[in-house]
Length: 112
Image (cartoon, rainbow, N blue to C red; front, side, top):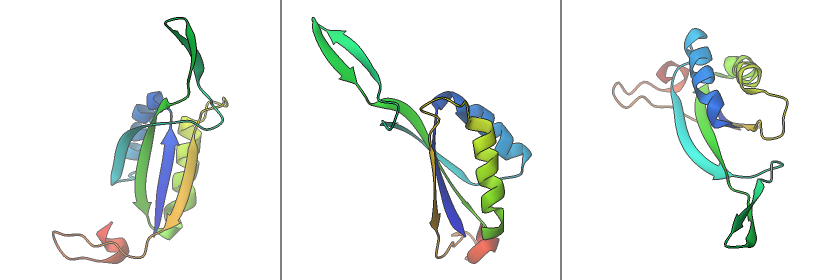
């Protein structure tokens, strides 16, 4: 199992949710975050002073998938959220040791 964390543009959340639903990908967590990478932000003026606004709103999505679904899921994310501009986001993939469904006690891929 792998944990896929994707940081994406806020306006790409709904299209990604629709694509996940169509592809029968389940179990997503979503958080609103602020951050900056290569997309440094913009300059604003506050009381005559130039201020660099470099914390940009983003969406963080976390999803755990079986090992054989990782590449398919990553490709789906990239296809849906890519604009080709700076600020499209990042995808991180991490190993998951165990998954336990609390309601039934099931473990491993079956608990996903």
